Image 1: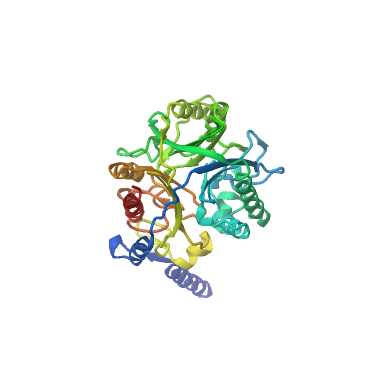
Image 2: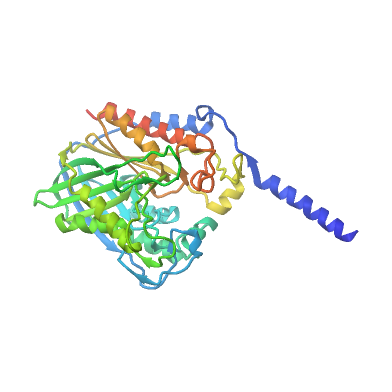
Length: 444
């Protein structure tokens, strides 16, 4: 009788825990949601203002390779294992662009993401130096073989190993140092833009019959008065050529790409583009042979990208990104309640970063953004006379944003990493279209 009572009590406790931890996912049209309406208020307040003087451009990089073994960030299956050696060093790279005595910055780090807690510390350092975070376009190469220990939530530790508060201090200081150093060699420069389709080195990784890709390799560049060329590239193929069993620090294929760029030009930066649902091709006799083949393959297209001159008119802004209550999915129709989500995943504000040079619009998002959606948006922007670049990992993180037609499929991207509910893909697509529409009216 006593055993039955204990089992009954455990059953009741389990039911209560389930009720208080999980809720049904609402499936209401995004247009009727509160966060959609708040976004419309935010975008209405956005009044694009360009600076219209000549540009001065500088650049810098800082080696951030750990001097002692730390966990590698990227794959939860590694269980926080530390790296066993360094195959190639990892860096923070920055390009500074000054117009009318105001500097904007493009910054990319060889990290899985730019962690939100690192961004918070970076913002304080920038404010002390008179720099606004809204003038810094943050991104990551998304390598899955760089240092971890920066995740201060349970999920962060699952993907990046045991948390070490010193790591977020080190990273924020290194990023800040790179930003400041990029202003020390500035000289007059002319901007250019080009893109090329590389369908050979990107695939849809979802293993579905109707998967789409975004094959555009996009390049924003500057040629300085002394003849130096500085190139920033984005591409959609995930930096996951190296698998979870490889415990060496590496930039993955973007390292090969940037090293190749710098053999012929003076400076290169890579930013992960719309990488959700997009994978690389792993062809070779081992992991690093595959990295070499992927990097060389992308570079074979990169060196053919045309450099079309664009206007020096520049703007930079950040807009608050309203998000719904999180509901990380545990099944097709059930998600975690917000209080539990915040314990597991953390709770940070999100922004949309906007940087525009002439008719070239660069939007930074706090997520793994879908290459499938990007393919649609690219056509929309082109019709408006705008060159569109979208980068992921802008200093916060809101999980994966995938195409809505995939929402009910049992996939890693649409279940484990889909955190913000029904029609989230449509919401983000609307956000980008709104920004395109606003800037298109002011770009003339």
